[in-house]
Image 1 (spheres, rainbow, N blue to C red):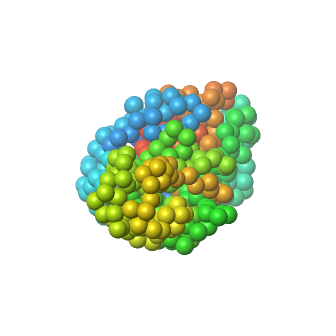
Image 2 (image 1 turned 180 degrees about the vertical axis):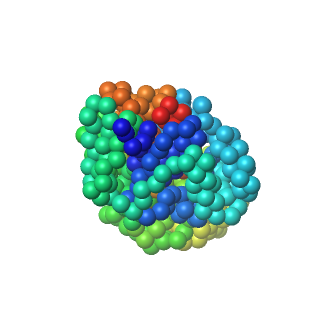
Image 3 (image 1 turned 60 degrees about the vertical axis):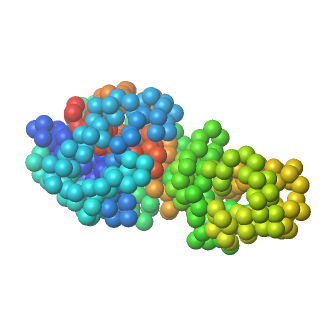
Length: 390
């Protein structure tokens, strides 16, 4: 006879939610994690305050080989549902920009809430021990944990992706998926700073300088802050486009998104003795204004520049292309893009189509949200969807 009704591998956001939901449906659940405590990534998220959801959650804020896959789970367990759970525990929260919700206090409150929900479902735990093998005999899954075997008819892969390896993250989910014949969309770092090389290293001298810009990659654009670093580019707008960026592609920056065409010609007429650097410094940090003016080769007074040259400067400033030579990798990536192929999973239940009672949820799956609480909402929704049917 199996030890449990379900074994869930991974005690992160998705695994905790799934265990709580299934346990409260009177399922005997074992939640397994090689870390010595659950929810470690939750605790460090949002600067320690956990950006736990986003009120603007919709499937079009997610990247996947199947852009429709996330609709079902997100539609059935919404941001409002998670907010209601948070409020039922008396956890105070606030909304920042762009619909992002954070705890007023600590991310530890969210972990404590999820642990309490698991306790209500009488969830059993195995923490701080490595999974050394997983097998399936046609009826039950057998999981070996440091030499001890446990069995259950259902198994959930909730071990996330390899982002933030210092927290113990690995690609274990992909190895397990391949073992059971599930395809894996090539994983890559997402929501990650980008690096600059070549003649663009000049901009690394601006380390610490930030500006409100529109950053774009292909047809996708985000208006938020960009930050220059000692290695390249970061800040919310860059992290957002990094999820869409592929090696060799340029990243476009509009440094002055609020300026109308012809504004430099107007400045030439009103302040002809001003330099381009001084004019730019009215809207951008001075060090950035200096480097942009130098790169444009326009160091004299505006009165000495033709309208055609000023129009070209405007065009460059609104379509400044950087060509990153890479990213800062999984060490600095907030999440992993790619993962277990949605083509092999049910969007309703997260169950593998060809292996009955095998499920994959959360970051392990090829569904990656924008910055700002979207990935947590996918974890809650996908975990809830699987927990409903275990």
